[in-house]
Image (cartoon, rainbow, N blue to C red; front, side, top):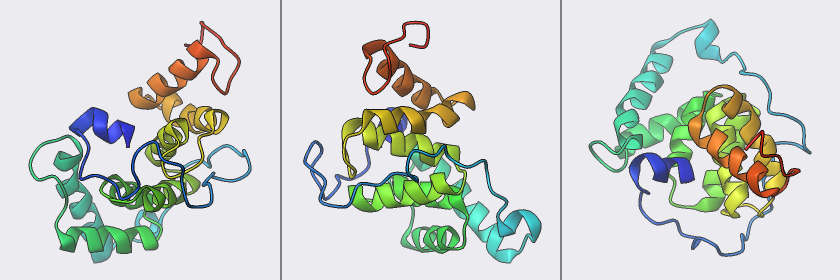
Length: 178
């Protein structure tokens, strides 16, 4: 959410107002275990026409994430990306989450992406935990989720993690890590 807003301005408003108490069960990847390393998807081992279609839909969505062109993918691309996510294309789960209009659904999709090893999904879920959007506000969980994407160079996750260390929110205050 925050990364999307930072890159492109936010898509259409979510159905749950920002800052409200979430109504869903809090999402966490799994009892404070670190996110898994990237998993091999079926597209990595057996490329197919379906995999090529997923890749094309993600490429068409990229400019939208960056704030160029349309605000949301077509219904056809959204349905395709949802099918790709359902078939363990974890990057597709992140894309669908970026364009979701419901915080709870967005959190569910980022949790799935993160559990599958997609670092960007972990970072976006971290931002949700940091701000209490679609999940309970949990700064320790946010820090844990930011760690992997930050190590991979994701600036938004590094900024989120740095803020937590700077202020001692959810982690011990540490200016050297801020």
